[in-house]
Image (cartoon, rainbow, N blue to C red):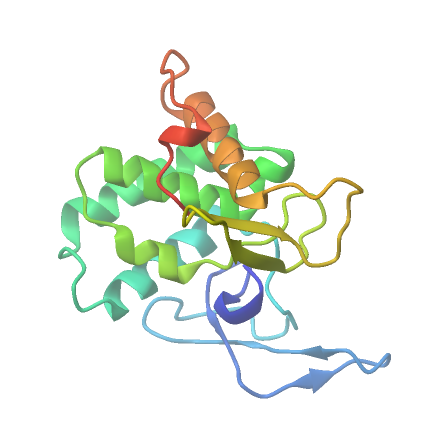
Amino acid sequence: MKGNHAFCPKTGASLSNTTHYDERGRGFHTPVPDRFAEEPDTGDLTLGARCSSTTALLTHFRRCHDREKDATPGGDLQSRAALALRRLKRASDGVNAWDMVVWLTLVERLDRCGHEVGWMRGHVELRCPDCYGHLQYRTLAGGTPIARCGTHCTEAPRDRLHQIRTLVADLYRRTFDPDTDLSADDVAHP
């Protein structure tokens, strides 16, 4: 992941607060060891990535779960999350392989398995599925939130939240239940 939730895309290690600059003046961070990723490759400079390894996502899950005071205790939840992440990463490609989509599909899967995982939504930053740009949010008259791409990457302004829910429903069906009639409207609001 990138942004406020960035971590090392290989190991899932947290990133340092110290900024290191390359020859072009771009700032990067190094992975730092903690009890979830004890031996990160500290030679890699990164700002996170759109698409991380299964290990990195599972490390991020464990770290986030540990930080949540109201989260269900580990054991079964972490085992189910590890299995689901492996399956999701195998089934995903293109935009569906982005951490944001994989993470939200994991939320959907764990929720449908009876786990309380609402806390997970606070550990992902939603981005435009077309260009990975930041989203601008509005609330419609009926109270329905929508998000549009902040860079206006397409000519027609589309609701990116619906687009993200569609990606999640597609990856969920592809990974866990091809015969389900799960649609974007059935996916919990990201």
